[in-house]
Image (cartoon, rainbow, N blue to C red; front, side):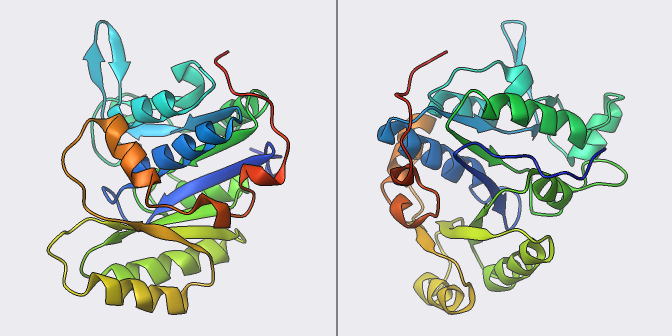
Amino acid sequence: MTNATVHPPKAAWFVAGTDTEIGKTLITGALLHGLRKTGVRSAGMKPVAAGAELRDGVWHNDDADILAAEGSVALPQELTTPFLLRQPTAPHIAAAQEERTIELADILSCYRQIAALADAVVIEGVGGFRVPLNDTHDTADLAQQLGLPVVLVVGLRLGCISHALLTVEAIAARGLPLAGWVANTVDPAMLNGDANIAALKQRIDAPFLGHVPRMSVLPAKALVEAAAGHLNFSCLPGWPDSFDAKPAGNT
């Protein structure tokens, strides 16, 4: 595998999280929703998705489906989610159970093809920032190979300050810029949430994009739209106001 950095489209970000189940898909969908509103040709990618359900003879992952619905460029699942795994467990384990190996080179190839079709691409990682993908690589290696600015989703719950700061250090250790971060309420009963956000603002040298509160149970599209309403996209470096994009539309 080559270590050469993939050249991004006009705008692209890698969405990482402080843990699993802390809202990466929600925030990735919100970013795509915001991009759609700017009129640019945008696409989401969840290269590794663990947990699939067979519907009408086709395997689906709910998170991957959300990103597909929010992108303005229609793409085949084989490109956006090249490793769709059936069991909802650690991806390297799920892949081994299917006698598959998650190869970074395959993901990079799919990303290059998507980047040629869209002006903006948002890629969602899997789990936390260092989840194993195979015997030798993890999601941090994938982010490094992609070479994209990172948007960090901090799941607000007890312990999130340490988790967030350790992840910020890990991102910097890979030589990747932290484009911005989002606070997403995971535990609605968490004490002193605002004080935790204030502590992170003092310690994270990157734009704070906003705080998404715990929301009522709504259809996925409504949740994504509601989350987008809590985010300030304009402070994200590379947001489409900085370039002339082609009109959005399905391909």
